[in-house]
View 1 (cartoon, rainbow, N blue to C red):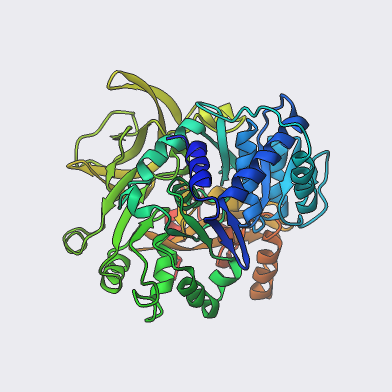
View 2: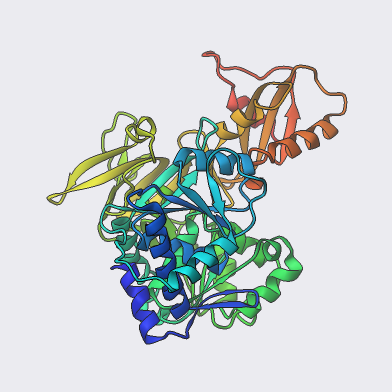
Length: 510
């Protein structure tokens, strides 16, 4: 598949079809194609031969979509940054990219430091208008192994790392995602629900599958997702046929008895990724949406969203606990390896290894992080990239079962979080001598995070101090990474080799 060609074909055949709804604003396929073309020419004139990725800052606006396509049409990848990302982290990302400028679809939280300029909405729209009056120039869109987009994930050192996804990676992924659960024809022109911000790779599953099928994207705002009184009316107004979210978000919606097929009569497909889908959540969904197909998938950002699939039926829910995450998609191979790198047999637990045509080439400008986990291998006569996920699992008759993380990385509400990232940022705060973050697990799933702290002086008002620390952490971490609970200790329990005894700390969780 060529995603740009698919979008262009829809723009030609159905120019007035809505591609994205945002409040009262509706963007058509014609305007998306025309405006992104004009902005791409402006970017090509501005950047000349500089192929550095361009950060696109904002929150689920139609203008962001125009900027994404403009970047790739002009021959350079883009990096989405949501407004919910703390400003210090935003600047970390920008400084690691060193772009010529940032396309800011919403006003930046603060004035940008350094030499990077922010082109805000008025400036972006002026570029589009000015380019309309100029002689057209030939565009050189990204293709093959060129970077299409880059998403920054949590890093154990306290600094985020940029996962590079190429044009080929995305197009191979879309070959599969357009037929995931239902046919491409059944998805044609449908409304796709967008829950995740564009800086979270789950959004690729709804955004680009929607564009490849000529559909309409219906994003939920931060306000709607945080206020249940607004959420259900927004869902009812969406007319969504394809639901893409984390299992946690669906679980939250299921708490309301009105969340069923009468609220969303058009729903035909649920697509889940990002964390464990429990039997309980799946059973409730199947009961309330008996005519909808429920698909469970698995895959890290490094392998382009997802690489396995399984249809969740009432029979499977009754027979399997926990639920499998499925069989690998075409062009992908799943293997289970021992710590020594030996391939394990069916039923044996080990590290999940992904090989195939959607594996990333590695982390942006970080060969030190890339080399330990990315590699190449021969599969069926072809050389493919491989990725050591750090996830534990096993294969049984071709089905993959996910068992959690091997290292200190967890999934919480669909977000991948390095506990070391939280710890390193806690240690930036004045008075904190040592810190250890621990996940609160239930049914094999992270429910929240508790941080154990040793401070120079144990606070008399521990509750007040905890509130202050959480507020300070917002300077460095997004909300989903801030520990729910902070516990002050005189010292951290240690293992024999001098490391924080996480097992002992886990035993302190209530």
